Image (cartoon, rainbow, N blue to C red; front, side, top):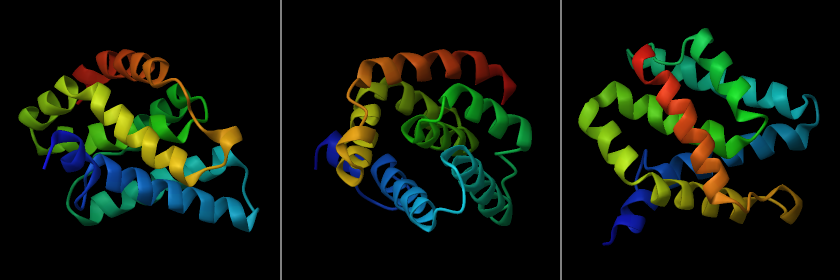
Length: 144
């Protein structure tokens, strides 16, 4: 099994998280009761609640607000942020592995997201997303 397959498969992997969060986003959107920004916020609040049930208070409101602000409405950015936050809570070795393989992680997240969304919503520039995410992580690193 190569690195991309590991990042794409298995419970909690970036690929799994991307599929789950995209599926949830599209489900909310299909019901048409919320705009996209409200859906993104709802997803982060729900994930925060799940993490608290697991004994990890890792997506507090200030963190969620910063993620939403930086995301500029892009679900793949929020997916990457969730992957970072959950791995940060597991320890520095996981964050280092994520950081060292970030290009591949972004590729996996985008492939899963793009496979589930329509052409007009697909994110074509992995490098722009990766650069923006790197900037976010560098400003957030000391807050955790």
